Length: 113
Image (tube, rainbow, N blue to C red; front, top):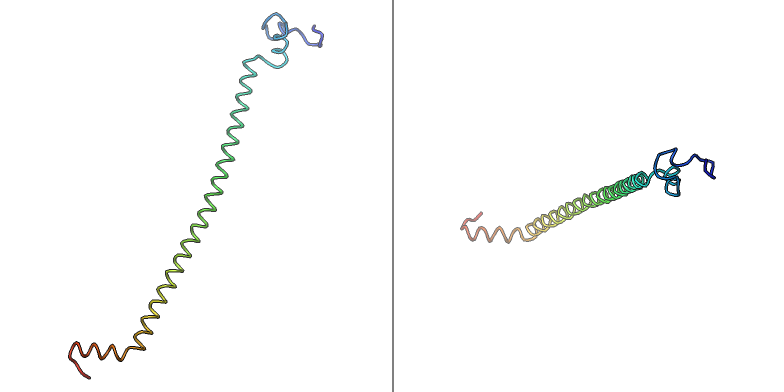
């Protein structure tokens, strides 16, 4: 028995002479096992970070695609407004200058009503 009430490290794992390293190995596991656990924790942490980053990118992409759709809607509305304005301008032009344009066309073609 050791002073800590534990069996010696030699009896637990057969590693060493029961000194400080043997005691730590018996209580906390071998250095290789501690290293492996640390690497597992690091891999899990990296995986959580990657997932968090991917979620943030997905949210940003979703927000970006929504605003992109609004942009197309605004561009379509603007194009529609311009088209209506041009058609209205042409109609107003022909209504106000219709008689003059008709006389001009008759003069070019040589026809009279």
